[in-house]
Image 1 (spheres, rainbow, N blue to C red):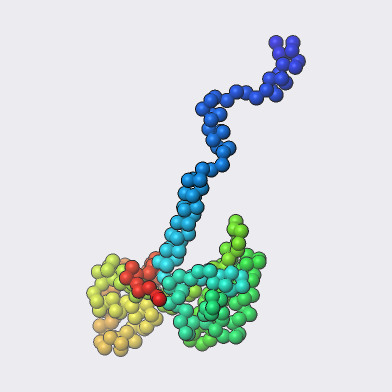
Image 2 (cartoon, rainbow, N blue to C red):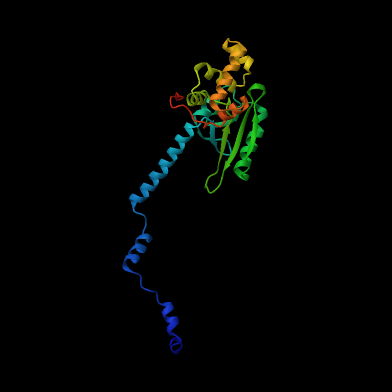
Length: 242
């Protein structure tokens, strides 16, 4: 019995139990530094992942900027570069994000600072009159060594022309109905659509009724909602900016 040998149990517990040779070999290999080939593969995979992420951002039909808390531009996608024209309330100068109007400078950099330092997100309304635009400020500060700030720019229109073309193809709209759909997505009322198209208002109403019947939309509002929730992807035939 174990009680007859009071030190036997403790001595056995202190003695390491032998490992099977296969397990011991695996443990020893695990403790060794990663071979150069594996380390290189991991670095290559990390680089490839970053490249893929850049390509993903280029495909989005939303303007996206990645900046530091001080406004240094880290990345901008194609849609952002197209959106930030001479009328947009934000601009890039010498690699730095700047507000086009003086009144927007303090709110912009306060939002960037709070995002970077406090992890706060917000919605900015920048610009003046017809050139106003919404910008969403999102902190990227979780589980990272260096923080950054994501800016998502508002779209200039509810439905991009490509989305309208996809929608028209999906539901078999005629060319005339597709043009009506595009005008409605830009906020035009039926009478304005008729004026633009040079047809009677009754013709436009018939076309709208046909579009609704084909798409299953119960109203123009429902039709616009269907357009609004389409995936915001750029055209594969887009022309790259220089």
